[in-house]
Structures are given as C-alpha cells and as structure tokens.
Amino acid sequence: MPAKMIPYQPVRRSEPDLFARAEALLAEMETRRSCRYFSDEPVPQQLIEKVIAIAHSAPSGANRKPWRFVAVDDPKLKRRIRLEAEAEERESYAHRMPAAWLEALEPIGTDANKPFLEIAPWLIVMFRIDWEIVDGTRYPNYYPHESAGIAAGFFIMACHQVGLATLTHTPSPMRFLRDILGRPTNEKPYLLIPVGYPAKDCTVPDLVKKPLHEALQWNQGQPG
Ligand code: IYR
Image (cartoon, rainbow, N blue to C red; front, side):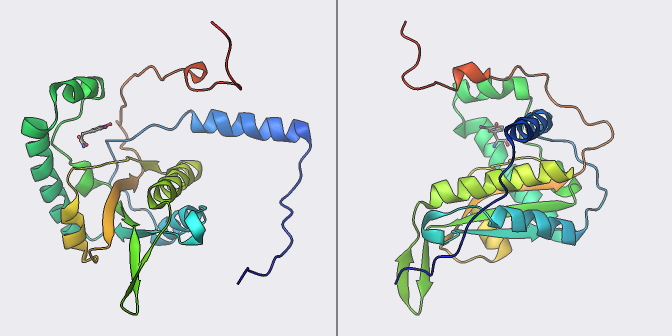
C-alpha cells in the first residue's frame, strides 16, 4: 500500500545565501583529513549518539536502512579489536597486499600497527545488512552497498562538522568484529571508524589531492 503523502518544503534560500553556505561548507570540508593520531580525551556518549543519528538519517534503498552502528568505548573490547585487527593487518602487509598496493600506500605511511584502535575514545563499527530474517523468512535489503556508503559519508561529515576526527579504517578481513561484538551472520562488518579528537601533536601526510576538474565533467565534456 502506498504511504500517505505529506508536504515537503525544506527551507528555500536566496541564491546569495545558497552560494555563501556552499562556500562555507566547502571550506570546512576541505579541512577534513583522516586522523591516525588520536587524543585519549573522552567524547560524551550523547555526542556520539547524535552523530550516529545524523548518519541514520541517510537515504537508503526502499527505506530499509541496512546498517547497524556498534559504538565501542569499553577498553577491554577496544584492546581485543586492536589485537585482532593488527594480526590480520600483519598478514595483509606481509603476504596479502600486492606490491602495487603497498606502493600506493607508501605516501600515507601506514603499517600493521594500529595503536589508534585503543587510544581513540570511541570505535564505531558499522555493519552492512544485506538481508534480514523476520519470523523465519529471509528478506533482502536493496542497494545495501550504496546505502551503507551514503550513511558512512553522512557519519564522517557529521563528525567533522561537530569537530570530531575520524579514520575510515578497514582491517581486512573484518569477520573478527562480528565475533567480538556478538552480531549475527547477516551483519557484515563494513567499516571501523575510530572517532575522537586529534592528538596535540597529530600530523597528516602532506598530500596533493586530485583536482576537482579531473573528477567532474559537465554534460559530454569538452571535445578533444
Ligand atoms: N587496511 C590497511 C591498508 C590500507 C588500505 C588503504 I585503501 C588505505 O587508504 C590505508 C591503509 C591499513 O589500514 O593499514
């Protein structure tokens, strides 16, 4: 049955206002960097709940919201997650990642050590739910990859906007997260996102980012 329709009229702004807001948001988002050196300063649980609520407002296929956010601040759990992630990463760096991948990561300077998994006050573990079981029947979700990606984007942006640093971390494989956190088999670990404040002496690689014109084409592009 189609849902009842209700009016939808988000704030209509003047064009100068639109530009001013777009400029301000762009300037703020361009200061976002992935953080690998966190402070252990606590972040209130209520603030984490708000940024997850913002992520949870994301659009999703057939409004299924095919994700679960598990927010971890228990030091014992964080330690287990760090140890298991480092064990997988040691294997990956030593045997699983091809030379070209290791070379691509060289400027970022990563290795198998992940102290931030214990230092950051919160680890947000995001699971993707490709199907759900309701009363013994299996129901697929729709576009779970796209949906989860959009929610993750909302989450990272929300954190940055409120003043929290994040790292989009993907130790691989991530099955251990499901076991440690007691999630059922239909929940696939998707991203592990440490959240907190950057350490006082935090640094990030001085990278050149791909210019926008390489990522944006208007219509069919310029001939030649
Ligand atoms: N998961 C590894 C490797 C890694 C992969 C990508 I793609 C990065 O942008 C950064 C690291 C790690 O976290 O070290």
